Amino acid sequence: MKIVLRLEQLALLVLFVALYAQSGASWWLFAILFFAPDLSFAAYLAGARIGAVVYNAMHSWIGVVLLAGASWLIDWQLGYSVAIIWAAHIAFDRAQGYGLKYETGFKDTHLGRIGGS
Image (tube, rainbow, N blue to C red; front, top):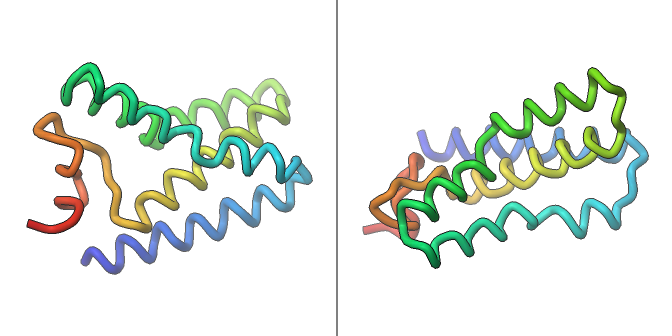
């Protein structure tokens, strides 16, 4: 089952990269922002609970959907581009097996424990 989940996310990553290419937005913007959600790792310095909440906020589809929807409604191209980059990042992470975090620790995710054991 984990392989199917990873393949689904890989397919989404390909889709989001294709959408981004179709948008005509700058690849520099993509390169600069692709790993930006991972800055949320720093919240773990405040403890596992706060770290998990902040990490999950930046790695949940909810923010992507809200940003994409709002960008579509107000015809905001930059917001749409950022939403696609953000979506691509989430799909990239999930394709590697990184899921939303539990408060018990960074390695405990909804997709299973990172690194086994």
